Image (cartoon, rainbow, N blue to C red; front, side, top):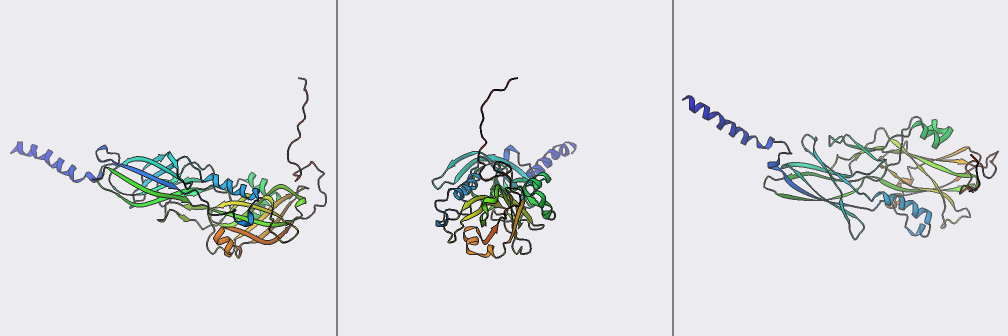
Length: 362
């Protein structure tokens, strides 16, 4: 009877181990399933400056090309979450890519996980300005940009920086391509599971312009601050891959302006200030704080500003269909009382440093 008891204990242990096989860790080699993931990265931004309105304007097309370049990536990060606990259970990186005929990029990679049901989150991992934090939780993972430092605010906004004290101004985000593939079941009978998914940018790109009088008094140092926009995005929330924009508090984005001309303008003055800029998106119904402030340093070194409310502009067909913010107002840059002499400060006619050759005795 004693011998039978000792033989019975190992048998009970084996039965318990067999019954609890689904609790083994994901890295258990006896249960790994090969996952082949194909990520199609869409390389089309949601703004066009190639309409007939801007045909032949190289400056505006150049602005758009700068944003197009951000859509070219070399590495995608794959995060795998438990859909019930939202906790991170595995991750990998995919670097093998090819370019399709339509210009989009196709990333292909293989990783091994245990069987079960998982949420897959994929995004490009090479954006210096757009950062990602809180990756260990699917609901909390956040794409964001840092706020401007005090020195950056002072450099961009000068003596008027204090007018934005109550508004967090963030760096302009770079495009972040995201794919979210929830509730993907991996069966214990599978040997290879192929996942096809598509990543697109969670960033909105806009073209903005305003007509300017007195451009001869403007230096090449100009920027704009647009407020009433989302400062970040919970990229792991939702099921479409677009994430969920944060709305409280609203933020602002600062970006540089370029001098150009609108050749289609009926008036005599065709000078404009314009930009193509990125943002995490407009906050719905953000009517009390949705505005843009244009800033330019004149040739005397003074900061001149103009503020425009954007509520109605965002409702126009140009804004909705083409992401154009065309401001039907004129920004008059006043002639400064004591303009600098040519060659001093930020002069529009200063384009290059003069080169002088000579010998220096040491």
